[in-house]
Length: 280
Ligand code: GLU
Figure (tube, rainbow, N blue to C red):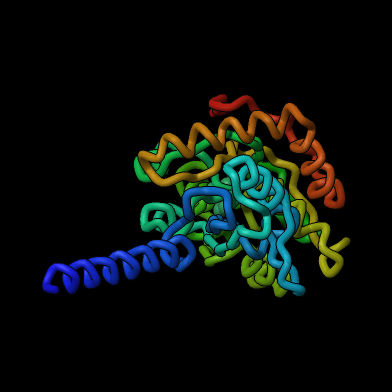
């Protein structure tokens, strides 16, 4: 009798723990399940960068990073419908990965030695260059002309760091949380220029409300090697993402994503980088 009671209790405990495990795969407190079979994957992107990572008014997502991340997720064994997009502003990316808020990040995320102390990267999958967005009737010939000017960039970005370190240390740098806030500042006259990757600026410049108002200065102020961020030490995911990126280039999907997303902005991208090939 006693034995039967114990067995029943053990069986109940087992059922409970199995239920907990089943719920655990999609209860939202980890970056992903084990892959396939309806598990979810959380992916960090930008929500406000047209052509790169944008949450559309209808709740869908578009942009080159979205297409790259979707391809990668499918190669990792997830259905596109099982991707949960999470907004990861520039300053939050390392923390989002180390906390396990997201499994991977595809958010105009440059591979740098400093960031590699905290996270791992797959890629690169795009080479961009830092540039300036200015009002159409102005011109800036070189980075140092920004000294004394009101310049906007984003906290936690390489763009802001490069300005402070080398491009124009005497610029009046305003660091906002997102590039869309900087663009609003350029539009209102609060700042004289916005600086970040040309790939991002081209997307903003081509928006209907800014057409003819803003232009890119056309300066190549840095090399920005976009990588897919992965939690530090998760080499298995890095390897799988690298395989996916290689396949995306070889089967033509990378080129299609470039045309679909950068074509409308007239952004002339660099050719697909080789995995592990960082341009300094
Ligand atoms: N690619 C640069 C970076 O990773 C600038 C763009 C961004 O802030 O996302 O910091």
